[in-house]
Length: 110
Image (cartoon, rainbow, N blue to C red; front, side):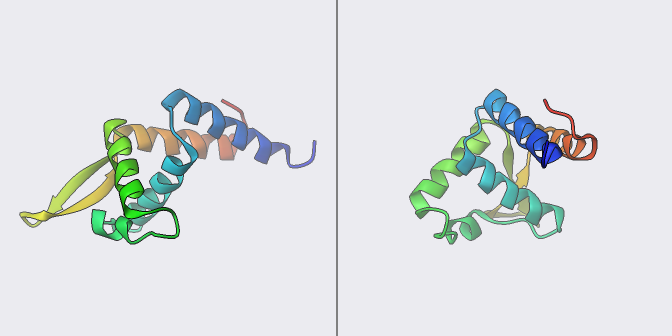
């Protein structure tokens, strides 16, 4: 089959998203948060509110709340400054990305 490994990866992603009740919009936001955190430059809530290319600030804030409720992300503070909330992937998100990485390497479906 043409691009079979990629299709398997998409199948794994779809299965994981269904299991975690993760919408495509939530996944996109989670991926952005995870990439920035992995690069050592975690996003703040304010940073995410500026992503108007994804949605309105109110909708983005709701998606952040949904990701927190699902424990996919959590807020962190630096240097005792409680005014700024940094967004970091939670343990379920780390497990999600590890499963996706395994699927990418092995080409196996969920």
